[in-house]
Length: 155
Image 1 (cartoon, helix red, strand yellow):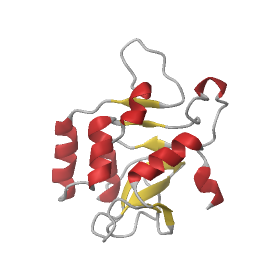
Image 2 (cartoon, helix red, strand yellow):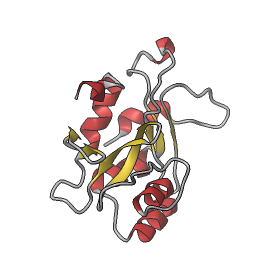
Image 3 (cartoon, one colour):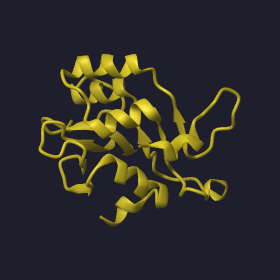
Image 4 (cartoon, one colour):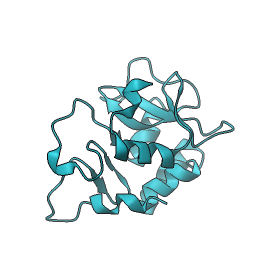
């Protein structure tokens, strides 16, 4: 499902670009799900298993022309997602927290996140924290980021 990210896997000794993903052990994902008390939504879980966590900051094919971005555009690791979901104190946690049932999975910038709502009718839909729809599902969100890493600014 997320094979389009395979070019961005960071391997030992390789140069890291603006788009980079680090492999995760599936046991880390399962442990995080156990802490959260639920299985991650299907597409998020597929992203974590297939690609891991990482960043998308440059349009696909334009990584060499990348200029510094003010946005992190970072897919969180499973443990960090659950820390934020459970309201555990972390440096990256926004002061206002999140609405009940919101699972932060993508850090836009300084304490600003996009979330999934696992208990909803559309658990893979990407939302702004406390707000509106960003993308109908995680796969389309990733594809939009690869086209334009700041597409959400126009929403």
